[in-house]
Image (cartoon, rainbow, N blue to C red):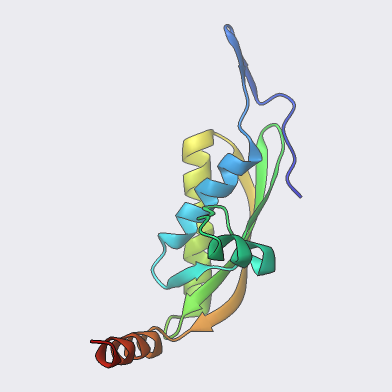
Amino acid sequence: MSTVSTEFERTDIGEIQIAPEVIEVIAGLATVEVKGVAGMSGGFAGDIAELLGRKNLAKGVKVEVGQREAAVDVSVIIEYGNRIPEVATEIQRNIKRSIENMTGLNVIEVNVHIHDVIFKTAEKIEEAEVNHRVK
């Protein structure tokens, strides 16, 4: 889905190109900044890479980049108790603002795919039980 722009911007001393992977990282960071986002959902391959110790800042992000425009798809996991439409709207705004401010590209589309909802309190309780058993 990612495409490399053949010519992003020409200046009097050369050419400026931004790789799609850069846009993916910007979108991923902008997404996890939003309150209510528990994490990114990268599918099976992304989860295996993370288990092997590779932190992928573009996990769950797909971009399509043209010469002046970009379209973004993000897959996220939401924390239980948050209003999903509000979190998704804030994700869209934050991604659009971040990419446009950092790259100058016009973001024409941000699609948010909610893949899961997690219960943060249940995880904390499980962690506390593990800590009490091991001394």
